[in-house]
Image (tube, rainbow, N blue to C red; front, top):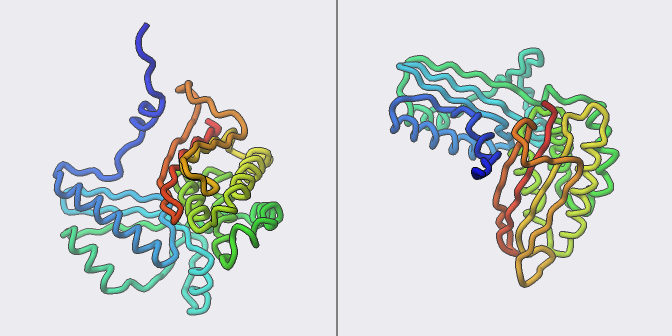
Length: 267
């Protein structure tokens, strides 16, 4: 009998690269630009959901999917920024540093920029549903971070409707875990079980199963251990199923923790 194929490798081969260029140096500059641009947006309170950069001859096509945090939205409303709801475009003034950063990597005569605002995919009913379910954890797991708690609820609404992928949602879970004390690790695990059960049991949900594996010194133990949480069905030995996989490392004052995330979505 032959060796079984790795379903994760076969799934990753289906994904296309964001950068399309024959020049390897241009490809490297483009990748570096996207990483720096994502860090710049995170400092401004904006989460980059998806990005696509194509370089062809003397043309540059940049497509961005952005999620504006609660703090950033409040700041926009105070400054009376113009918001066009139908097309999802924000008229935001560009600073000179951002323009210099872009012109440093690319020297093109034509730039096509497309920005999609993911805040417009939110519905009031889903936000109220998650808020009523998760408000009991707001004071214990989100102390002095009420804006981040609201962002977590909004991203959960986008995750349950398959508007964002598993890697973005896992990064938000990692940010929630990063600042917790070791005595709250048990409550955090209970919170994740309750959250995943709520996501799967919700009517018209596109998520059929969720599995999360955490490696590290949980609860302040001297040795690292593995803890996994699973809700629903997550078949990892079938290619026909729509399985998303993502992983991150979360660095805290108690050590480094590894998060592995499997999500079973409807085809």
